[in-house]
Amino acid sequence: MKTEIQKAKDKAWKAISRYIRHKECLETTGDVDYGICCTCGKLKHRKELQAGHYISGRTNSILFVEDGIHIQCVHCNMFNEGNKSEYEKYMLKRYGKEKCDRLKDLKHIRKSLNLFELKAIEQEYKEKFKNLNY
Image (spheres, helix red, strand yellow):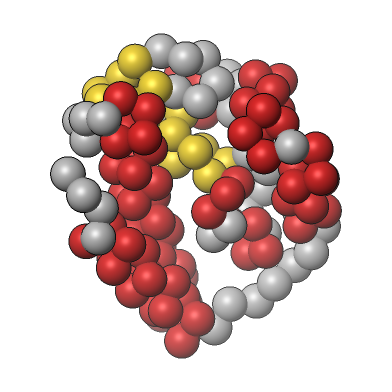
């Protein structure tokens, strides 16, 4: 049985994932229903896209860092284990080496998120989603 913290973490992830997928579909194609995978470059329907992490691992310090989460097709994210070499190229082009290095450093930091923080993350991304223009 899930704890309140686990349930809140799931809800926060659902909110940020939804926001990322919709936002990046709009950014890459101008259409909320279709987007381009950041790693393989294929056009996919939003339902075939996931919010994939640049840095693998589920430590709380990187789990909700928006700049480290981008749309990936299911094949790249799940079956190709994130397609790391292509994700690295994408991130370096988009953000530069310094920002990528800072994101990588976060992997080694464990962070405990409390119920209040998780609910705040959920609300933040629900609001960001509402403010998307489509």
